[in-house]
Length: 119
Image (cartoon, rainbow, N blue to C red; front, side, top):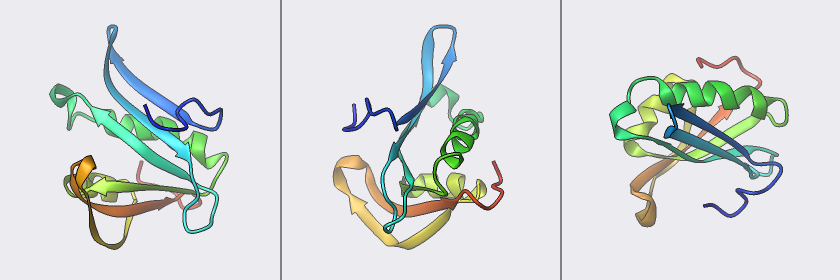
């Protein structure tokens, strides 16, 4: 559980097969470079279902909800996930950095919600 998960501003989405959660994503209202924004704070897909479109579907659900409230989404993307986000219109900002407790090297990425996305 993340700090802020229970906030009325936080957006959650889940993907289920029968009664089993196979994917989830959380957007927390968190500024980006002094602008009102949502941060994709967490997204996980069960290994069996990775690369099957579940992550894209979760974002397809969440992006319009966020776009109704803010104009920017951002995240700290693990290195292997950068191509996934880039295909959906997200852009890398800055240099690679390490978050040891979160799985190693990351890039900060953002999505301008005012521009039609590839989602």
